[in-house]
Amino acid sequence: MIRFASIIILILYSNITAASNISILEDKSIALNSSQVLSLFKNGKSQVLLNSTFNPGFTNSVYWLIIKSDPGNLNHNLIIGNAHINILEFYIADKNGPRLQYITGDNFPFNQRPVNNRLFIFPLEADVGSIYLIKVDKHDESLQLDVQILPSQQLYQKSATENLITGILWGIIILVLVFVCFMFITIREKLYLHYLLYILIISLWIIADKGYGFQFLWPDYPGFASRARPVFNAISNIMIIQLMQSFIDQNKTSRFYRPLNIIKIASFFLALSFLMLPAELHTLSFWFLGTLLLLGGSTIIILTLSLAEEIVKGNRTAWFYMISIFMLIVFSITELFVHGGNSNSTLNYLSIFGIQTGLVIEIIVLNFGLAHRFNSYKNEKENLLIEVNRKQNELTGRIIETQETERRKIADQLHDDVGSMLSLAILQISSVMDNNNSQDKAKINLEKSMKVLGTVSDTIRNMSHSLTPLAIEKYGFRNAVVDLIASINLAKKIQVEYIILGFENPKNYKSNLLNDLYRIIVELITNVIKHSEASHCLIQLIEHEDILSVLIEDNGKGMQNDLVVTKSGMGLNNIKSRIEYFNGRIEVSEKIEGGTLVNIEIPANTIGT
Image 1 (cartoon, helix red, strand yellow):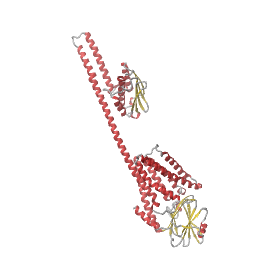
Image 2 (cartoon, one colour):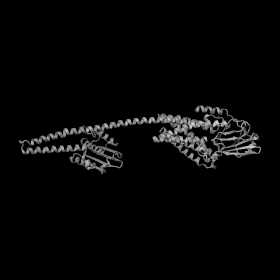
Image 3 (cartoon, helix red, strand yellow):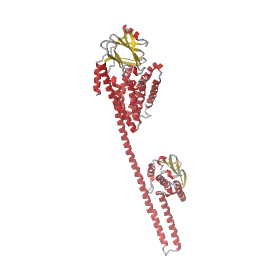
Image 4 (cartoon, one colour):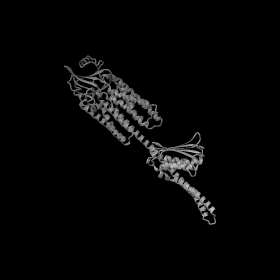
């Protein structure tokens, strides 16, 4: 469809030539009036416009178009193919001299245009022999003209074809806008917001550049009509950088990160300057436009280098952005040539719809890039989820292993310690009941039985503490730890000191955390007693606002024999598994003066009820 329409336009334009009776006169003084121009034309001071396109580039002059009315252009329309001319004065000169017929341009409301069209169209309805004088004033700016004279039917066909192609291209862009907006609302990722803003800004720039903005969006604000293009151009410069940085995940370590941010800041202040520039300083716009072109060129160069840097690192997503920006680079270079002045350019599809087509191609490629990026992130998340599940299964296995170890420990203690001691006690009691025993011997056997039963009682008490410390439920975690330390000190094998801050309200913690933490403390102290040969041990339990801290240190032989995996103990790996279950961490280090230091921290967000 687009190809067919473009062929029609090319056929139409191939039959359009500038009429030989169109002349042009340059007014370097910017002071000539219509009568003076008419006199200079009659004296042969003007030049015949041989080509429909006239492109002086940046100019300080005012130009006059002069057209003779003859039967060949009677009831035709003069089309000035530039939607952005500050002042256009249309005069008709007959035997009574020139008279002003229309005055229009970007400096006047849109409704002053003779025809409701984004371009400047003037009906040629004067009598044969009259002369049309058109003042084209765009001094101190870039000027490009495409002058055509068409009959009304051909003008209608041309407008209909242009509107058809424009509608197709903008329909694609609007669909992409809706899709990106949906993605942002659904995923809530900043990349889609930057992409959405970029398309909106670049679309506004194209609308302003083609004249649709002044026609439909701000027809009553002529002051903004001449500033809209550079303002949106500068802002789009910011958004294309921001989109690239989000698209390829450029970080601050890149050597091009800071230069790009400097360009963004400079573009912002340049856009602000265009908006705030007073009318009396209009001549400065030449320098502002030059600065804008310089920033645009710098952006393209540094963007390309940034993408090349990421491509070298193996970032495949950068390839998509590199390909998508290729059209932007091509049209930017073309824009530089156009504004520099190139009178040999001809009217074709790309000169009319090139920017819209470039934008459509760019966003199509970017959408493929977004799909690739989304799939890559999806695969990474799936792999991460698999790894998390693997670690979770491993952690669960360690916990189960710890539980099995504790069960074996209980079974061993019941069988080896408690069972044998109870058998011994039964034997001694039965000997008391033997009538042949003397009273003294019976007393001795009863005393031995009492000691054995006392040992059994202590063993069962310690086992109950290892399983589910009932003292925690009855008296709280703090008192249970104090009771444990008191029973250890009572044996006088090691001196244990303690510092406990907090833990006043056991309801602040999960019960399984307190039970597991108690078991860990018991296991660590048991290891100190059995393996470190220490004479002193310090235990610190501190309840902070954000973490739960446990510190155990001794003055023993150090890490060489500490925290070994014993037959009946849970071992360092199982202790670590329990702590990791609560998202905590454990550090074991050897003190310089001798002994071992164990530091445990558990985040506060994992200890609430």
